[in-house]
Amino acid sequence: MDELSSRLVPDELWRLVEPLIPGFAARPQGGGTAPLDDRAVFTAIVFILTSGCAWRMLPRSFGVTVPTAHRRFTDWTKAGLWTRIHHAVLDRLDDQGLVDWSRVVVDAAAVRAQKGDR
Image (tube, rainbow, N blue to C red; front, side):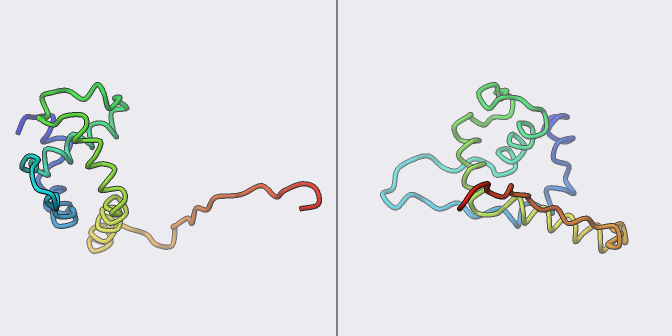
């Protein structure tokens, strides 16, 4: 793993994330290629999300094609991976006494009321 990948997804983060990643399901009709390494795909996605890089500009050095990275991002989003990672990080920080729950802010979306006779 190169230096950039190690900084984006250090071993400690990967140990937290790896068990949360949904398993690979082979296509029922068969065919296709073997799944790519989840860590490589996760690292490529983290690069996209943290750098502001467009999907189509994903550097080849990650060893992941743009369609694969985007498809996994979509699949993992539908599977709730990012929420599970968020909760796991919060749990880890709380276990270390690094979260002050008295200072938590609840965020909610506001919807403008309709005008007129609705």
